[in-house]
Length: 394
Image (cartoon, rainbow, N blue to C red; front, side, top):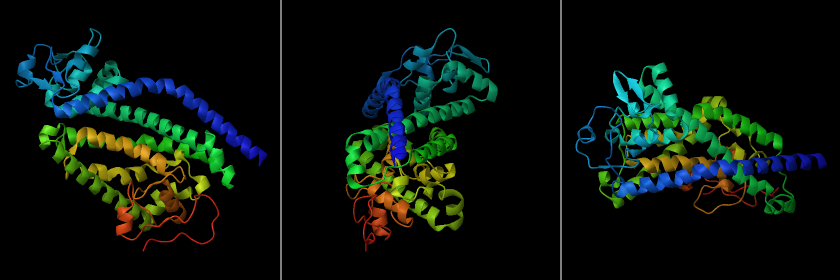
């Protein structure tokens, strides 16, 4: 018991130290994210950037290139000028561009607002020189663009995983209130070995898992979806709210049935989903288990976000926010704590899913499980030996 407590304390101090070191790195990104969100939200009401100097391609007239457009949705085109230097100039197919990012936009960023936004985000992490190398290596500006989107998703996915899980870890296991949760109730703490196993599995799955958002981006940029970029395209704020509710409802139903199928189909469960369910007791569940799964498991459960895009209109930024929210939500529902408010499908319900397998398949809400009869309610505090069994919702 003494060595067990020492192990937990060491893991907690290590995680706390890593979290402190990472805080400085995240401040810059959080600031940039705030600026980005504010800018895009403003662009949904009206244009935020005025057409300015140059499209990025030499010898072209901006007014002519953008078909007389007088205003550009966020992030506009000025960002291409800001990153341009004499060292970033890039020649492709006989055309001189201010940078490889301008080549990706084919000199017309206003014609491709979603691609323009993705390239803008890529520019925060990836230098134009990398884009130039990838274009020359692949022989295609579009292939290079999506490779850069993949790299961006992987880096940000890793940062988000460690940041979200690290914060939850601190409040679950390091903060003084954790003593009341565990020692105060005689509840065992998760072994540090379990946490490291989850981290290794999650890190491996991310390599493949982050490819799904790239498919989203390709579908959107290629015009195969009903995604819109500004409120004006959909008729205003009220239609935006209604379509967002419809889109998220379709996603919620899709995830419920996909998750349920991963359990009821013996092949899928054995070869794909079982890996995640090796964490089958409260003391084996931690925030680090959020994406500790087979990469195809994560893709299958998240694919309703992609499959609904060609069917239901969705705001592009809203889609981004939903993906971000899903990553944080997955961290929350795996912490095996009792922080829950019905009808939210929170951690108290998802812990029952891991201990009982055939119940509580929903993602965010309990509505689907309640409607299709798979909701199982908790009968006491999580992780504490109880008499009797959890009752099933009739």
